[in-house]
Amino acid sequence: MAGFISELIRAFLSIFVIMDPFGSVPVLLSLTKKYSEHDRNRIVANAVWIASIILLIFMVIGKPLLDFFSITIDSFKIAGGIILLIMGVEIVLDLQFRKEQLEDYKIAVVPLATPLITGPGVLTAAIIVVARYGFLTGILAAALSIIITWIIFLRAGDILKILGKQGTEILSKIMGMVLTAIAVEFILQGIKAVWG
Image (cartoon, one colour):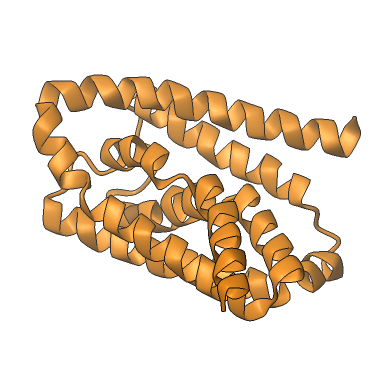
């Protein structure tokens, strides 16, 4: 039993640290600043649900699926980086690339569910965790990571109240730049691995 718990903790940390929900909270606030707390929580719930499905699929058939389509994790890094780059530019320059009526759904899917919650790093970690510790331990570790991430995201409203509107705007611009930098790093890592 002690061995199982030890493996579960290691598996959980392998996924949760890469998932980094605390680092995603400012991005969440930036992307949902025009929404009420109720609508933001609904977007978060959708994002967590979608991320859970993506993570489960990858833990069950991730490696065979990638191999079948001849897709590498590095290709995911490039694709995820491009998506994050667009979102970062939107935040920094106050641009609007999305149609308003679909915006909340699209935010839930991209970039919250993927690549922020279940990005290339998390998907890679999930595949490795299953291979190393087994499916049951992997699923439990992933479930714990998702649940804790959901709780952290639901508390984003409290952070918004503490920061205030002006503080949120400033943080939004800063995080837009950070998000853009992360995007560039993702793209560069993918390009180096594929063509390096």
